[in-house]
Length: 348
Ligand code: SAM
Image (cartoon, rainbow, N blue to C red):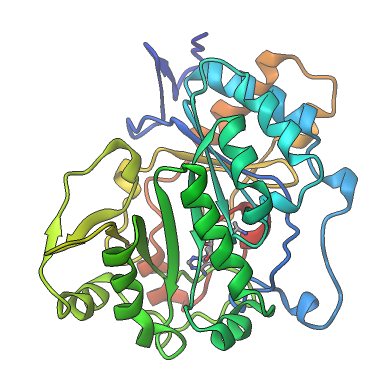
């Protein structure tokens, strides 16, 4: 169903914002809880042993999420990503995903996970209709992995990656957040993985997000430098952009390579002009830009006996508020500050 509400709306089949960007991709943070405590994600309270997590009734219920997705799909959303926190720690996740997959014509459901529970869930996810998985992996060294994530579970994650490949996920993408002085000495090892295994290994610029982020000018490394380093291993052959690549620029190392390399540059070559995303935080706030703290409260609407039209209008309001760009470089120059949202509740 198409809705016109002035300003942004649906044109033909497409949901467009004020800057003529088509909004087709909804990312759901299913929970702010996680079984890892990554150094760039964990808050000060969590570090001090106080959880600071949302209470169960603050999270959107599965019924609420399904309703929002159904309305969003009617409006033109065609791609969904489940993230968090760690989506696989939410109770009864599999039955939720099966119900999600029944929402026609939604045919593209993806998941971003730390991989800790993939060994158990990979086959079921594929069976339920999730075919694309992104797995976060910031080190290939067991001890360092434990330092970065706060948990000694590299072997489990690695088995999760192997299980995902065996289960038939295609593609399996590995996300490495590159942090100078923390893991940048592994760039070549990560790139080498793409020679040996059918993985898309993606190098993501470290973003200044979250109050406890370890981000600073020294830990940040821009894609140009990352590519120059990896380019020493061999020529980087650009691959034709596929619909599924999103903001990544995709290459493969010349010669025999089972996989590919992706470079994601939210800071140095931002992709705001073609951003097609809308996020729903774990407590039901619509966020139209990862790096802008403005949000639209959908949970209050959902819990006030709303109609589907009310949900539509709230989605349109969030889209109307989508900024032209995150302007992070200007903000950093002016204030040296970051964005204060928490990645776990927003969904990375
Ligand atoms: N638990 C899941 C996982 O680990 O993939 C999903 C949530 S996690 C917040 C999503 C992604 O955001 C991860 O790949 C993580 O590395 C990335 N991320 C978190 N903070 C980041 C930051 N400051 N800069 C860049 N990426 C970040």
